[in-house]
Length: 89
Figure 1 (tube, rainbow, N blue to C red):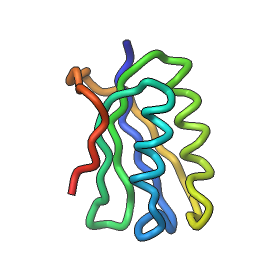
Figure 2: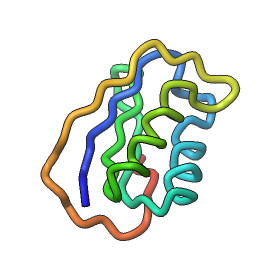
Figure 3: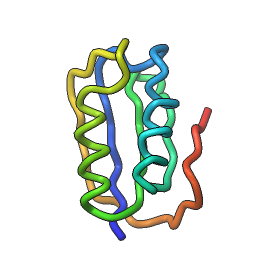
Figure 4: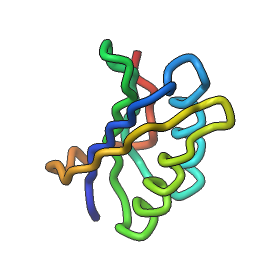
């Protein structure tokens, strides 16, 4: 199992990005968290099979319909063994 941190820049707050990312991650049987950051980015930590994480990263490059994604940055992080997928506030 891999764990990847994803940071998404652009018009990604106020467009249901977190809820949409959570739904997509759950469809892919991934676990983790997603949150808005004060700098306007969306940050997620995602755990699961590498191929499923890759599919989520591809989704992040588009996001939900109202989003305008400028950049998606990823980096491996230490697994935290999340259960389910939570939107943090």
